[in-house]
Amino acid sequence: MKNLSFLEKMMYLVNVLLATMLLLSFLLPYVSPKTVPEFAILSLFVPILLILNISLSIYWLVKLKKQFLLSFVVLIIGSLFTTPFYKISAKSYSLDSDLKIMSFNVKSFDYFTPKKDTIRSQNGFDFIADKNLDILTIQEYYQSERTNLYFPYKYQKLKSPSSNFGMAIYSKYKILNSGSLDFKSIGNNIIFADILKGKDTIRIYNVHFESLGIKPNEENFGEENSEKLIKRVSKSFKKQALQAALFLKHEQQWKGKKIVCGDFNNTAYSWIYHTISKNKKDAFIEAGKGFGKTFKYWFPLRIDFILTDKNATVNQFLTFPEEYSDHFPIQAQINW
Image 1: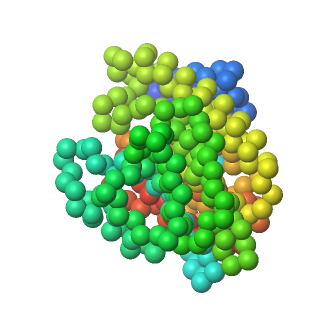
Image 2: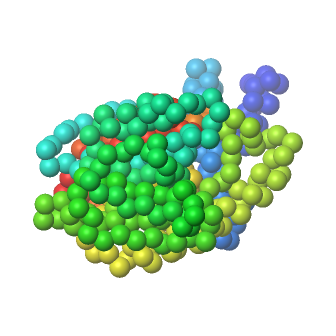
């Protein structure tokens, strides 16, 4: 510190704070939001904490200052305990026997956004049709006469007999069994469908855990209403923990092949991701590339996932940049 200017000393103090926050974030997967919901909020900021610590480490290294070791050591520790923040290279194969699956939070196909009109391509229907999918799982589904998705089999679960809003699983393969976990939450749920592909029965879970209520174009932490936002997000994390417990209890009853996909409303550094992904493969980690950003926000948030059982092979994973919703669609090709 003696050889640092006053400005550099202030910068290093900020560096210490950011490195400490990042170090604490490595505990997130092991602390249930039911116990300390406010701590769980840190999971949303891990991507930006990583970027800042990488930048500071590079800054000190260029300056030939030993202070680079602080963030560097914390980042090394993180690489041993957390999921990759950025994938440099992707795995990409395509076999005829692959199961091609897409997960997409469609935000009601943007039917209620004034700037949109009603043509198919603007609601993403042509985009989906062009992918020649085997399975399509949709969160924030909206059923109407304009919903044009052509699959021979479908299971949809609407919030009530009088509602058009819910979740859906579309399939090219016969659906043998289906059901819903029926969350008490107004806008969230988990549904499943058992599909028959050849001689294999594969369970597809479509999950949509409790929403955080963050509006990317209207609210940000640090604004005047941030205190209310923090309370609301903390409450949502507690609900997510209860929903995860219901899912795990249901999942244990299925011993066959399975895929779990959907909108977790939380990052890969969170307790809920750690809990749900245990003994599974993350398709992005197996075959993805880049940040894997799935939510339209000012820093890279990966909150939508496709997970498989350990025996599966992920041959391809894609995150599409098309903006038909506030989420970006993700797709994987999976084999056993």
